Image (cartoon, rainbow, N blue to C red; front, side, top):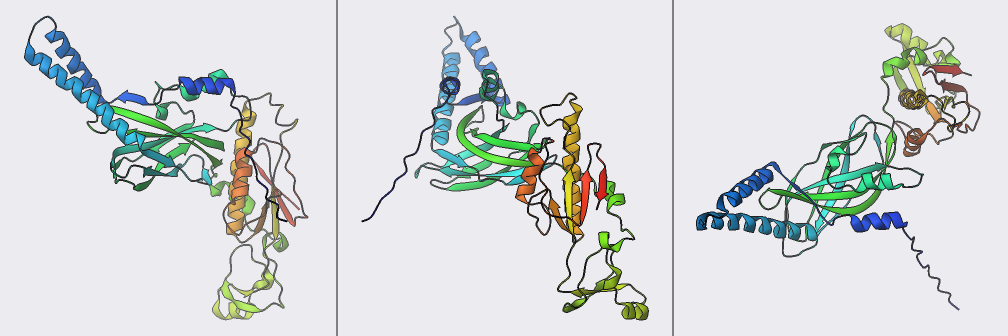
Amino acid sequence: MTTVSSTVPVLRREPWRERLFSLLEPPRRIRPTKAGWLFTALSAAIAVAAMNTGNNILFIFLGIQFGLVAASGLWSETVLRGLSASAPSPGWVDAGRPAAIRYELRVKSRRWPAFVLQVLPDIQPVTDGPRTLRLLWRENRWWTPLERRQSGIRIVRSPWIRRIPPAGTAQAHVEVNFARRGLYRIQHLEIATLFPFGLIQKRKRIECGVEIVVAPEPVPASELGSVLSASSDTEQTGLRVDPSGEFDGLRPFSPGDSPRMIAWKLTARTGALTVRLHRETLAPRVYVRMEPLRGGPADRPDPSEQQRTDRQARIARTLVETLRAGGHDVFLQDAPPVHEGLSAGEARMLATWDGNELPCAGTPEKTFVVTRQGHVIRAG
């Protein structure tokens, strides 16, 4: 006996506020260009000049201008109606630096190509609170250009695509600069076109919903030089080596190496410090912790606490990457470590950290604590 199980998707009913704003939202966003405003002023001047004059030539010119406007609207609508857009998840990006958000445009029609296209992402911070009427109004107002109304998010560059063949695709990217760390979501992708005359820019909105993790911007590594400098205690700063392990070569001495790894005979013969490499060479387990906010994230009497939290996240990221570049096995709180750089889980943790206490599992050999004042304290 064969049992067939099927899953029925549960449709989530949108709140009445969002349904209302979706009904009031215009299907297209139209904005005249500089040439469009000049063309409009010229048409108005001809209309005033032709009023009560019976001058057929002026009426002919006015009819031609109105015909161009109608043709521009029809052709641009033909271009936008047969377009679809999608954007893959960019993973995590850095705050304070231009990030490339890739997208793909596809022409559905097998007969007509698409011309003069540009894509602008509508990016909003991810919030767990209720979506108020004011928030919905700010997200859906169409008279303010999209690239001017995103607080803390700046569209650096969005290239124009000249032509996409029928049933073809085009891939490009938009450079976006995020001023602050956190979680963001691409609510919509707005496809704009200037086809055919460049008088009016018409835009079409497509739902997206892709999440972007913005990691904190690293601080200059020179600020951590005193903390990461080599110490006389070789068990805290150097690598642990098993002298009975298999010999794997030689390399020049670097600050932080254990004296037990130095090949003294070769050093005495050449005059340059040289260390032995073994396959069983192990990096010390280093834990990086962040001092939590007293009283919890909900109790923040001073707005500067948010700046201190951002500063801690920046220092923690720089500390993790610098230690890993030096060959250490670094654990950021309880996140699983990687060999180099910053993992996706750690980037998400640093992007969403709001000052709460994070678990720190295991028994570290050495711990670095990033304090609320922005200092790094070595413990253990």
